[in-house]
Amino acid sequence: MSIVHSDGLGQFQQDNATAHASRVATKWLQEHSSDFRHFHWPTKSPEMNIIEDIRDALLHAVENRSPPPRTPMDLRTVLKYE
Image (tube, rainbow, N blue to C red; front, side, top):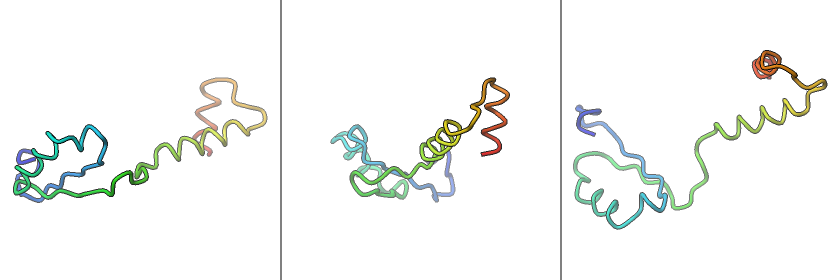
């Protein structure tokens, strides 16, 4: 963190995944808490990444095309349009 954010303004984002919330990881974060800010997510919070939602919307749009795209170029054109 000190290399990437030498100004001390870095913030560590904890997603509470099981591996990240282990005793070892939790202890390390507590021991180094003065080195950076730690942003806590609620346990089992919904996914904050919208990429999967966008992918699903594009997949749905492509599947409902008539006629469906037949070549990679057709698919690229459809995806750009959608």
